[in-house]
Image 1 (tube, one colour):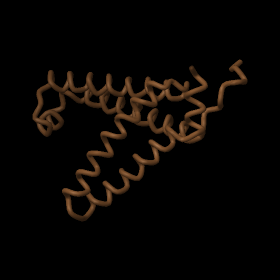
Image 2 (cartoon, rainbow, N blue to C red; image 1 turned 135 degrees about the vertical axis):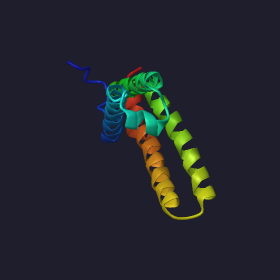
Image 3 (tube, rainbow, N blue to C red; image 1 turned 45 degrees about the vertical axis):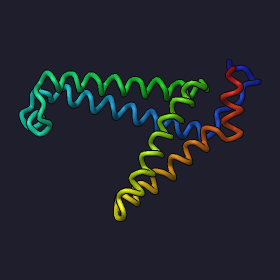
Image 4 (tube, rainbow, N blue to C red; image 1 turned 180 degrees about the vertical axis):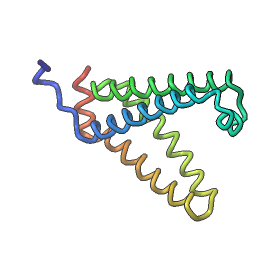
Length: 140
C-alpha cells in the first residue's frame, strides 16, 4: 500500500500523463505501420525512401514512442526528471510557435500557433503549480 504521507497526483498531472501515453501509443503505432508497409511502393515512393531507409525510420519512430511512454509512466510516479523533460520540450515548442506566430502573418498558422501557445502555457502551469510541486516534491 502506498505511503499515506505522499501527496496524491493532481488531476492536471494525470491529464498530461494521459496525453503523453496517447502520444507514445500513436507514435509506436506509426512506427509499426511504417515497418509493416516499408515494402509498399506507394509509401516508399511518396517518401522517396527505399525499404532499408524506411526500416531505420520505423525503428527510430518506435524507439521515440517507447521513450514517450517511459516519460508518461515516470510522470505518473512523480519523477521530477520527467517533469523537467516535458517542460523543456514544451518550452521548445512554445518558442517555435511564437516564431511561427510572428512570421506567418495570418490564417490557420496563426490560429494553430495561438492554440499551441495556450496549451503549452497550460502544460507548464499544470506541471509547476503548487499542487504539482507538492506531488513531485513528495517523491524525494
